[in-house]
Amino acid sequence: MISALTTFLSQAFLFALSLLMGVVCYMGTKKIATKKQLDVELPLMSGSEVIHDSMVINASAHLLAKTHQPVDIAGDVLGNFYVLQKNGDIVRISPSEAGMTVSTGYAKLAAANTATDIGFSAISLHPQFHVKNSPGYGKFYVVAAETAGSGTADFTPEFGNDGEDHQDVIYEYQTIDPLLGNFKGASREIVRFSQPGAENNVESIAFDHLGQLYIGVGDGSSDEVTHTSPSKNASSLTSAYGKVLCINPLGDNSANGQYGIPETNPFCRVSDSIPELWAFGLRNPHSLHFDPFQGCLNIGDTGIDGTEEINVSRLGGEHFGWDLSETSALFDRSLRAQLKEIVTNPAITTKTGRANGNVIYRGENFPALAGRIIMTNESGQLLCGNSKTGMKYDSSVSQVKVPGLGDRPLSGLKTTLDGELIVLCEDGSIFEIRKAASLGTEKRANRQLFCQLDETIPAKG
Image (tube, rainbow, N blue to C red; front, side, top):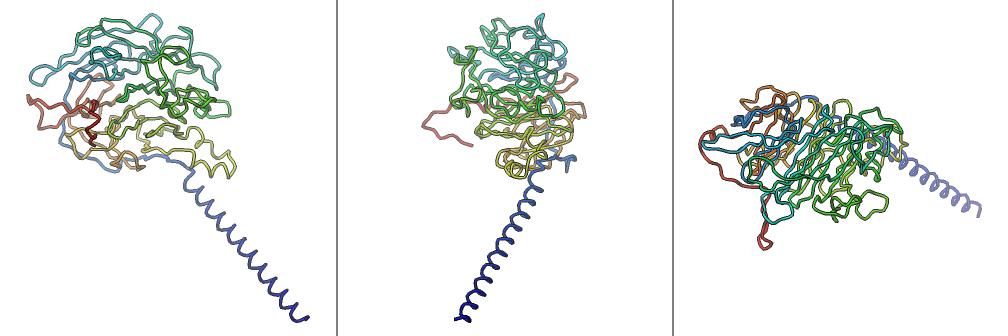
């Protein structure tokens, strides 16, 4: 009896010891895995500081016009371009015979209360600009900076609101006839933002194919990150700052009654959120580009320490990390481990100079660039992401060499309606990147990206 009891106790002790060792091994393995996960994934994309290689394409920079401090450009279905200058003047570039262009003054938008040191920053044409009898006929939109106290702001910062530096306003202009060479029409105010600082403001707007207008709104200031700094606006669902907003400028169900709230907005039915919110966790979303092939929005954002990001929003509701990633060292271990579930990493990060524009190339002239993210920077470089899908993160970038561009600083990048590249330079030059062999009198067929498809015909691409 005693022997059996001794055997039982020995077996029980061995079982308990084995169980304890198993628990210890599991916890040790879990700790190592967690530490490895934290060490690898928490330092979110630091940026590629060097250009890995260069790409030479059979292209040439074709000068469209010389302007003064161009900040943005928009094109229509007839091949006309509208260049917005910092001073509020719009230059219209129209095609002429023999492949040449003619540029003329189209409009002067500056007013007595324009904040001239900041000026105008963005222009976008409504997709129905040339569609007669449609709500968007003849309408285009601009972003203008006005002096403090110029009007009653629709949005004010939740954090860092110590005073007003200026106000950013989005205006709608409607011409009586889009075919006219000079603007004749009226304007109205859409939305007004109070800005506590001169940086990280409203710098970019872009339409999608449905006529929804995306607005990039910075966090309000370039101050250092603290518990009460403007950077905290980026993660607050009740603040419009540090976000991309999405509105219907032809609607009227907003709080000020001047625009509509799309029902597809991810937070439109969330009680503790502004309904305009599309994406958040951004510092200075300075360049927006909607890709109609994938139905996604590219967001160029300036981070700290010279980091530039290209973020891709597919469905809306993404948090792109600012300033959670930068302050993750202040979080406890469990919260830090959850960051990878909260933050959407950028498609591209670089440290090659401030980026001024980004697009996904969908043209036909340069197959080597097809589906790649193209971006420009202030150093005069045209860069190409090495991820063809534009969705997969790849820290490396290549420089695209285009004869004729030289090393002049670049201030913007857009595309024609058939997907070819338009480059804005700080010296006022506007270039279209054309296939070298196609320069001359040959006419190019228009293959417009924004089009209406019959519901019975499946979309291609």
